[in-house]
Image (cartoon, rainbow, N blue to C red; front, top):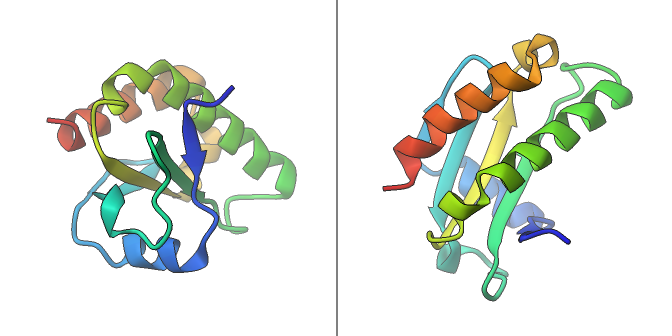
Amino acid sequence: MANYSMITNQSDFSYIGKTKKFSYCDSFVLKTCNKNELKDPKDNKNIIGFVISRKIGKSVIRNKIKRRLRHLLNDFFENIKQTDKAFVFFTKKPIAQKSFIELKKELDKILKLHIK
């Protein structure tokens, strides 16, 4: 069972996409906002979203990236659950060649900047 809920509303994606609170690394850009600012805030759950362009690769590659990111977020859930933020990951092309361990290091570094 997931400890977070996924963003499904297009207006929430575009709202977070326009926010100025972001950090980036080689594989993705992480943008955040307060959960209460969204159109449809979920109760007692963190809100996560992924934007994976077709430029990354075919659907098999994009789904593999989503599975990896979801699994990594479950590992970092103890740090995330104390915040009332919504997180959206905008992926970049190099993410397809990264190993799981490299992604974990990058995610750890990025989340430390957003969770204080």
